[in-house]
Length: 227
Image (cartoon, rainbow, N blue to C red; front, side, top):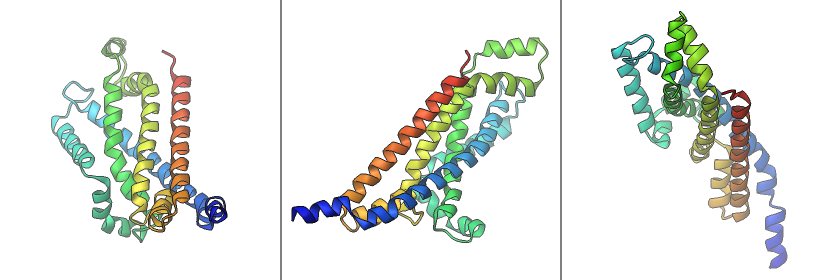
């Protein structure tokens, strides 16, 4: 009994054959979705800041529409959003399963979240620096990117780390719905086939990935912080 139990933990083919491919799938969909969400979320976040009543180019209607869309996007639970986006996912990717297809709902879910992070980070910049730049004759683009984004860069990098960690969590949930990755491995083998070793190793793997992402985010943030 003991030997059989040890063999299950030390030589489980379901784990040894599937762990690294599942890890790759988790990293692939998380990195891809994070990159796209950072691109789109940064654009939306800067527009939210710029079109605000006291922004660089106030546009009340645009600001309200963007703010409403961001709030709606953040309000929908990811699992429901993923199901609702199945037609769009099939139209774009040709399928609704697999890590490649899951990048689409992950990006849609993560973009409004990151947009709010960008907005918060930009608004935290000292208003005195903006006023000083205006007095020196800086253009709106120079103020936006040379002052606001530059001063908020350390916080923005931290926000990217927070975003990716959240996306990793989303990807694990997506695994239950056919996305693959470590979430699917834990569900298909660890839970449905009662393999506790698969479940434990999967959890440890996700924890390690999250810790590495956080360490990288903290390190890069400190390197670019010259305040």
